[in-house]
Amino acid sequence: MNVVQLRYGADNLSYLLHQGREAIAIDGGASTEILSFLATHDLTLVAITNTHGHADHTPGNARLAKATRASVRSPEELVRAGSIEIGGQTVRILPTPGHTKDSVCFDGPGFVITGDTLFNGTIGNCFSGDHQGFYRSLLSLLALPEETRVYAGHDYVRDSMAFAKHLEPDHPAWDEYLESGYDPAHVFSTLEQEKQINPYLRWNAAAIVAILRANGLPTAIDFERFESLLKLA
Image (cartoon, rainbow, N blue to C red):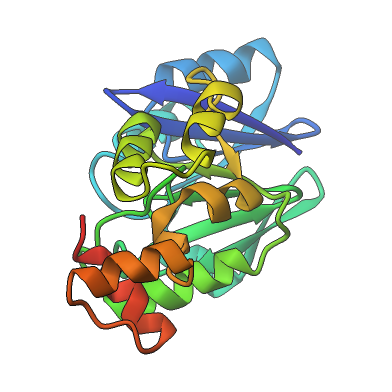
């Protein structure tokens, strides 16, 4: 299955998944570019959907639906279905509440599209979700194979790495990722990299636990360490 990433706005990222002659648009704010790609590659858009309902992720829905007659499928509808088919291949829908109650991720062969749940190097803010739900959602993503490519809803990489470096100035992973793993034209990381570079997934790392304790924050159990990390942002 092919993953096409397209930028729009300051840092938003749209996705077009295609297999055979079929495609689906996810967070299709880059509607002009999506329609051009569909025409150039003779693809039929079979569905339009979103990682969650925030307005910066949904502006392309109406235009894409009008231009292609593809149906708009809400995250809640996809959760009920459990998966979506593209050209005979299955993409699993993972409910990942935390950033919002309706957040979902798209788990395809070798990749996961994470919206504002998991960014490359950080995580989203907790708006209409809750910390316990967010923690469980991240655990479900961490259970995917380490070689899984993480495609997020925004490119926050440089700011994320600056914060990570502020927390752990001597950790070499930050500069290594920026120098060899980050391409603004095609932004992704692997889950293996995320476990090295993302402070919010490193709640059990000795250096992180020491920082939390130095700030007088709870560290007794995994969830406490995760929630304490949120207070450092």
